[in-house]
Length: 212
Image 1: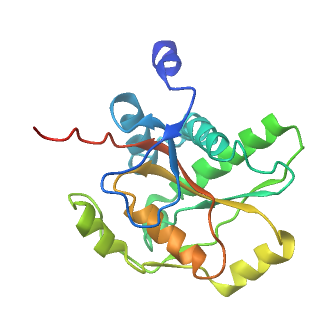
Image 2: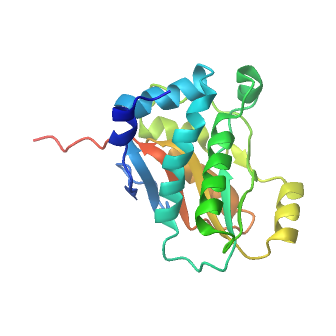
C-alpha cells in the first residue's frame, strides 16, 4: 500500500527519542521515525481506518527500534515485548488490537533476523483501567490522565514468570508523544517487579525547538 519512493524514504535506523520534558525515571525511549507525513498516515490508517495491512511496514519500523534498544543486551537472555494496552473497549470497537498486532509483527521479524539464536516473545502483561482520549492534552494533562491507569494482572505475570524467569523487557507502542503513557506502562510493570530496559516506538513526535 506504499509506493516504492515512500517505502525507500523510511528510516532504517532508530534513535533515542527523549520527550520534552522527560517524565521522571523514564527508561531510554527509542523510535525509528518522526510522527509526521507518510508515517503519521500509516499509523492513523492502521489504528482508525481499518488499513490493517500497514502493520507490516509499521512492524518493521518497530523492530528496528527494539533492535537499537537492545543492541548491547545479553543475547542469550529472552526478550519480552510488552505492548502498551488500548483503552477498555477500544479494540472491540475497532475489531482489532492495533498496537498488539504491530508488536507481534515486529517480534516475528526479529525472530527471523536472529535465526533462532534468542527467544523473542510478545507478552501482553498490561491492561488499561481506562483513561480519556489523550488528543489535545499537554504533557501535564497527559500525565494526569494516565496516572495509575494500567495494571499487570497476577495471572498474566504468573504465566510469564513460569516460562521466562529471566528476560529483557521492552515496552512497545506505536507513537511516543510526551512519554506519559510509556512511563505509566513502565510504572505498572515495575510495581510487580519487572523493570523494563527500554521503550520502543514506531515513531516519535518532533521536539519543539526552544523559543528565543
